[in-house]
Amino acid sequence: MKTIAVIGAGFAGLSAAYDLACAGHKVTVYEAAPQVGGLAAGFQAEGWDWSLEKFYHHIFGSDKALLDFIKEIRADDLLFFNSPVSGQWDAQRGSIEIGGIIPLLTYPHLSVFNRLRNATGGAWLKFLAIIDRWQHLEQTTAERYIQKLMGKPAYEAMWKPVLEGKFGPYTPEVNAAWFWARIASRTFKLGYFRGGFQALGERMAEAVRQKGGTIRLNSPVQELRKIEQGWLVISNDQAIYDQVLSTTSPGLLKRMTPDLPTSYTAKLDQLKSIGAVVLTVALKQSLTNGMYWMNMDKKHFPFLALVEHTQMIDRRHYGGQHLVYLGDYLEPSHEYFQLSKEELLERFIPSLIKVNPQFKPDWVEGVWLHREAYAQPIVPVNHSQSIPALKTPLEDLWWASMSQVYPWDRGTNFAVEIGRRAAKEMLSK
Image 1 (cartoon, one colour):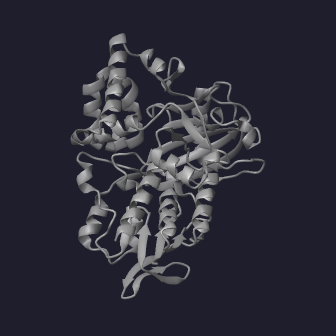
Image 2 (tube, rainbow, N blue to C red):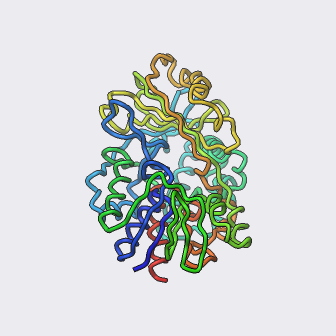
Image 3 (cartoon, rainbow, N blue to C red):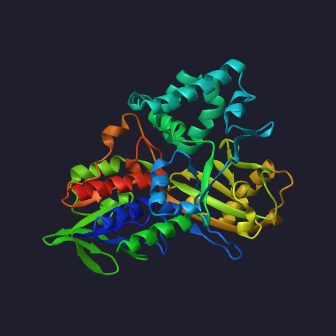
């Protein structure tokens, strides 16, 4: 039996801790926040029966790693699927549905030929997933590949606003493998959990505890130090472990592990990412009148995504309120990381009126603001050559993060996958 510290009680940390504890090791999970869940953690306002994610979440029917794990810990009773309507904002029509084959084939701003070319391109990307032939895509950029595969009209109308909205100045760097993974791994049906993702996180934590693991909340780790007896973990107190798995951001791993060699920290420094800012508003009335998710054009709107959560999940679970996310991916230096929720709401209100001319500020019954500096990795051409291995150069120290799930995009499914992969490596040592 080994003593093992896991840093971070997100989905990667909890799934790794579960497997390590199942193997008979003594596992302690350190979490800086007062709750488990990481980026999938939720909050609960007065009058709500369910928690709501700080950052909008759902899963896909293809999320095998997560689906297998929740079945293993007997949490599949929490899961259900819906088929909400998703689309993009259109200046003439207000919104255009794009979440399905028929909507794509009837997309109004493309000719019949370009609609077919766009749909055929999507089918080709799905086929590449079936035969596992994506590696060549990382050798070119997404914007170049999409125009070649689906045509410039489709790129300009549908994909360019999404890429530029999400990656901003990094758009020309993003490789085509990221785009492939986004198409290949997604389904039109979306899954959610009774009680929210927080309920699933708590069930995962309970599974860890049942296997003998310990979870320490409100316990940020200040330093990881290699000593003769093992690894000294300095948090609210100090303890020595045989092995350590960190599931933190690359910047935090570097700061709290001063013994990492410069050759390795140089790789960490090369991993680019951007942050997320999400303003959640509770409204008296529906804003979108049927649309769950809308991609917004940031040339005309001050946010990238408008997600009316209660178009997918019954609002009775939230005291009858209509819940809307207004989210964006931004550099941590952006002013949105400094503005208060009241200041940000004031910036956003004109856009809410544009979406629904009947909207009035007195519809707003609650406002919550959540920010995270490390939310979306940037994946340039030939990114696979830059990803650090899960095993660090230091003995008995591993690192598993969203920066390493490539070519897949960050999300709870791939957090579970990389957490369990890291645990497997640790157990094989």
